[in-house]
Image 1 (cartoon, rainbow, N blue to C red):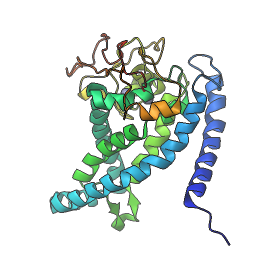
Image 2 (image 1 turned 90 degrees about the vertical axis):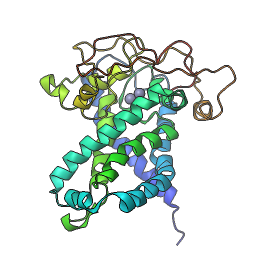
Image 3 (image 1 turned 180 degrees about the vertical axis):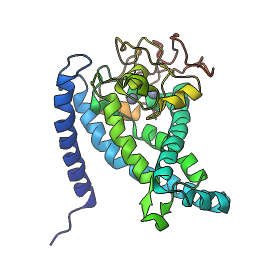
Image 4 (image 1 turned 135 degrees about the vertical axis):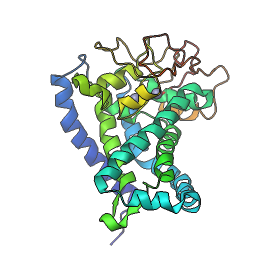
Length: 302
Ligand SMILES: [Zn+2]
Ligand SMILES: [Zn+2]
C-alpha cells in the first residue's frame, strides 16, 4: 500500500483542528461579539492560508535552533539547576514554565516592535483590521519562529524544557505550547468576555485587542498569557473600554506572496517603523501615543 506523505497527514490534522475551532468560536463570536462582523471578512482567505503555513513551516524552521538550544543548555547549565527543576512536581513545572515562556516571549515580542528589521516581519500580524480567532494564525513564519524561540530560551536555561522521565514523561515545553496555542486563538477572538480583577492575572481578548489597536497605544500588552508580566515591565494597558479600530496606519499588500516576501526583500519605497518610546516604569502605563504604527510603516505588516 502506498504510504501517505506525512505532510498530507499533517494537513488533515490541521483541517480537523480548524473545524473544531470554527465550531467553538463562530457561534460564540456571534453571541458574545465585541462588534458585529462577518466570518468572510477582509483578509479571511489569507488568514486561512496562514493557518496552514503556521502549522507546517515553523516546526521545520525551529528544529535546528531548538536542537542547538537544547545542546547548549545541556552543556552549560549547571547540574544543580537541572536537578532542581526536575525535582519539582509536574504542576509546579507547568506553572513555572508558563511564567518563563511568557517572560521570554514578552521580550521577543517587544523587540519585534522596537527593532526595525523584526518589525518588518511582525507587522504582518498587526495588519488585521478586524479581530477574530483566526487572526492568531496571521503571522510570518519567521515571526513565529523568533517568538517561539525567545519563549523557549528561559525554559531551557532553567532546566524546564526537557522531558520529565521520572514524572511520567510529560514535557513542560509541549504542555505550555498547547496552552499558549489555544489561548492565542481565544485572546484574538471577537469575544466580549471580561474577567474582572482576574484580567491582571490571565490574558483576555480585551488585553490583546489593545495590543492590536490602530490609533491607541500599540506598544503595550506584549505577553501572551500573563498580563502581570507586562505590569512588571511597565507596559500593561487595560482600560474598561475596547479599542475603536485595529491595524496599522501604513499600507499593506493584500497578497499573501507579498506579505511573505516583502519583509525579506523590502520594496524600494518601503520604510521601516519602530517604536521609539516605550515606558519602562514599574506602574501600569497611561495611554500615550505609540510610534510603531506611524503612517510610514512598512507596507506589509502582521
Ligand atoms: Zn505585536
Ligand atoms: Zn495578536
